[in-house]
Image (cartoon, rainbow, N blue to C red):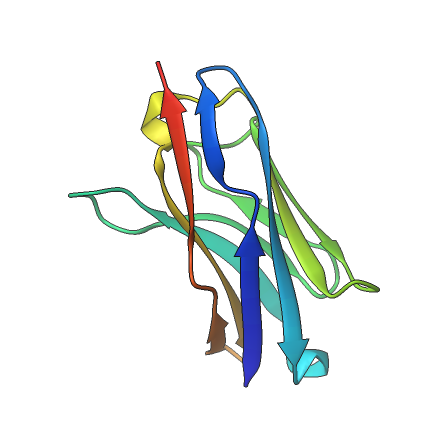
Length: 116
């Protein structure tokens, strides 16, 4: 199993920026993909961004051009840079890790609140 600890959430005004971090520990050599989901109250969970062990990234249409996912292999940490934030980006953001298509870790979640 992999342990994931998120940080970096907070309250920001519309148009502002935040950087979320997700630090991995445990059997980290097995991680093939990491990503971020978000869930807002009363809404379905949404996959926001992913990054593979080879650095390939993917984004939800709702965040393309505003959010950037990156991975620091030395620090075993994945980052999600959130720019041009909108009130509709308000949610709890969760990071996760996969190996061979199987979910092997979830973070505890970090709250992002964007005020208008």
